[in-house]
Amino acid sequence: MLQIFPDTSTIAEHVSATLVAKIQSKPDAVLGLATGGTMEPIYAQFVAHAHRVNLDVSRLTSFNLDEYIGLSPDHPKSYSAYMREHLFSHLGFDTSRLHLPDGMTQDLEAHCKAYAAHIQAFGGVDLQLLGVGGNGHIGFNEPGTPFDCPCHVVELAEQTRIDNSRFFAEGLMVPRSAITMGMAEIMQAREIVLVATGEAKAQIMAEWYQQDVTERIPFTALKRHPRARIILDEAAASLL
Ligand code: GLP
Image 1: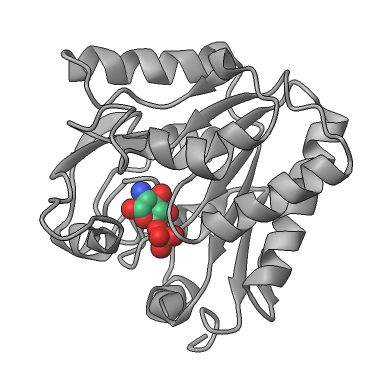
Image 2: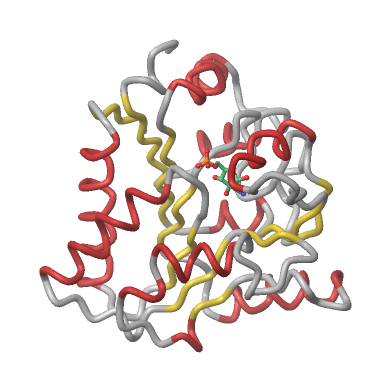
């Protein structure tokens, strides 16, 4: 289902309300969390909303989509640091329940298997938040990733590294590879909310709209998901 909202603040309110309602109805829910600029206003709104209603988040479990290889959780550009800055440090989470792939792991293959197994051990994700890359990637599942691919190591597409270089100060290289939850774990989530905002997403949204399901555009997989919502602002919807 496609929903178009006027702007990012309306989207942030709507997604935040969805999260709050989910957590109120299932306080021990398993959330799949995303990073990126799109999520920043959403997490800010959710934090404010959670404080307002005194939301108990202590029983939640979360699994983040991805992490750069070679960045430790303390590195300011790691997704671990992002999550602390925008969400985890603001509410009373039980930090032992908050999971991200470990970008410093010595055994990448074993770590990917363990991360996927950990998600399964919790019965999968109840509500998965997603942004989308300019090339249609979700998490870091780049174009061409098989839809049944589990958590894996990925060499980032050049376009992805260029897009994400805005988050890295001059002189700091965007890592070349990452660990990402696979299309398999994402598609197993019981509910998915993908958000795309701004003109930079208009072209890929138009492709999503026009194309059938294709591994060339990873997030077209969501067309087959029974409870996936694609939420756009007017700028991202401008070429539909
Ligand atoms: C990054 C992340 C994705 C994110 C996407 C969009 O590469 N791995 O999970 O959804 O790119 O990011 P942004 O919201 O900054 O446009």
